[in-house]
Length: 381
Image (cartoon, rainbow, N blue to C red; front, side):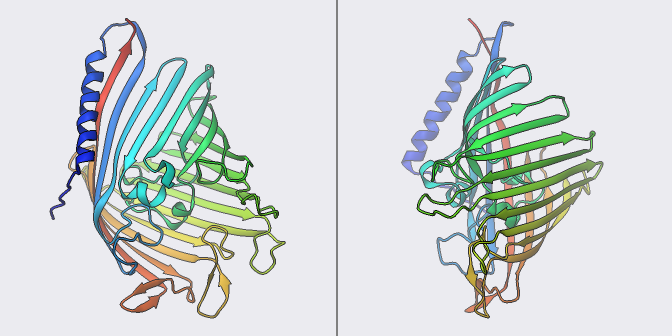
């Protein structure tokens, strides 16, 4: 398999400029002991080839698009991340390009994954403001961060990004607490002048086990909607790793006011379960599997469809994923993965071979690598 990437003139100019910028950064870094802070820069690239038993048309993204969202070959992400840290201030800037950015990020800030700056208030308390990756959920978004390459349906419907203010408190080395004041659920710009609240708590039980809780509380109804749709979304997760076994478990429960299909004065709920396990067969290879259940009967996440029987409903899905991974180096991977998704018996949302179906098969191959560009100490003159 050969993947040929062609650069347009504009991309080539930006690439040359970036390399020149990195070179200049290296030149200005002095090596003394009077340190003011540290600056680092890293990159990540993931390319893929995928096929789906769902005909969405040439050039279109598959249903539940995020990772490897096209039927064919493509670039999931070309990501450049930079961080600055010292005792009093810190900043993060992450830019990304590719199908993940195009299929999941808002068009007006599509290439900004993260951009935030923080100030230390006390020894263990920081305040940060700007654009963040989501604090919510069991899985991450990028293949390099997860056991699997694809993400669960539930992760797709969770926010990928958010904007606002974060309080970061680390009372002990094992406990981290983050509080968020946000513009909304998966949005950079406020759509109704109502602020939302978020929380993330992680606790390291021991060297092998960590647990966490995240939530989101907010009403993202447009200002023209006079009915309150307060959403309270909760997530709990567990990560365990010992010897050759790695396990990830997660569960979500969401309730939203005045959202029932049959009675709009009543609340509706969504729930999901997720379990992923990886077995390291050798130091460089492993196998993994994931099971997922997603139930949104009133469509508060998925939206409402009419099923085969004429009933209004939201999505009800379960799925199973399996894959193998080979790591040529510690900072790279090659994965072959397949997934089967099954809708409710009357929810035929997939179209293949001129037939509407309730199920879909997926096969994808991913190749990715991470590498450092700069990892040095900035110093005072």
